[in-house]
Image (cartoon, rainbow, N blue to C red; front, side, top):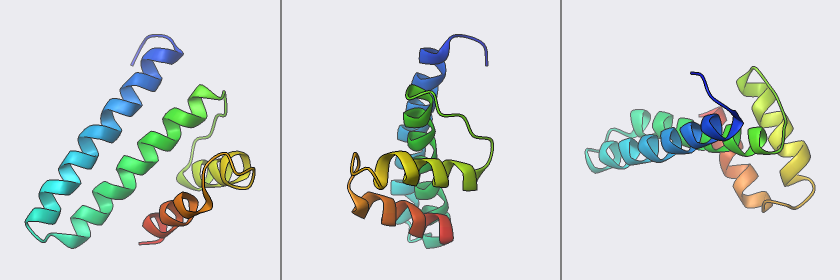
Length: 92
């Protein structure tokens, strides 16, 4: 993908929304494992957009989780409950 930072952030937000919609369809069909996978990726794309917006760079899923926790959860910018949910989706 080419473009500036805001284009990439918007792309990640769009992917997060589309992937969330996919998870809802899978939930309706009781496809739980696939739904959890899509929920995780929806959150992952949203967190990447947040990190990009704040100029944090990472290349791995563990890195995304770690930086998100360090800069947003531990500093209470985002409620700890959301951090716990993201971690649980990551684990599943």
